[in-house]
Amino acid sequence: MANFTFKTEKATGKYRSFYSDDVYIKFRKKVCGEIIERKTDDQKRIYKIRLQVIKDDKITDDNPNSIWKWITLTKEFDIVDDAKTWLKENKDGIFNKFNLYFDEE
Image 1 (cartoon, rainbow, N blue to C red):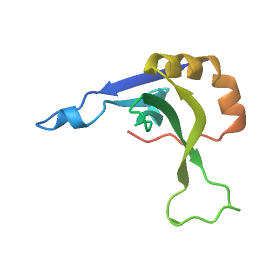
Image 2: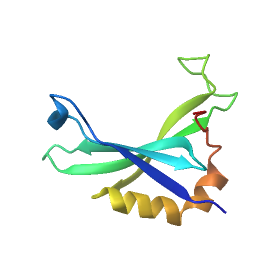
Image 3: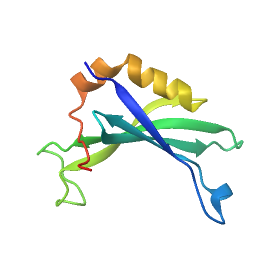
Image 4: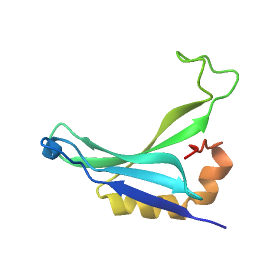
């Protein structure tokens, strides 16, 4: 079975030092999430995983026109490579628990 792959887009432009690189999570060449960088109060960098999942009919949302929503997993990582490894190791659990939405590109 296929595994998660990742695409990193480097920040560009005059103010690139103010922005972090975008790390997109892909499955079978379609984007289904991202790894985001956050800073804690003591300016330590942490990385979190955000996934695109299809909404349940029971959930009321501010945007009724969209069929998917973002969810952020509670697990935090010190480096991006740890997040990538964790995703690959827990692929089966993620697919059993969540109904992922894949962007059409």
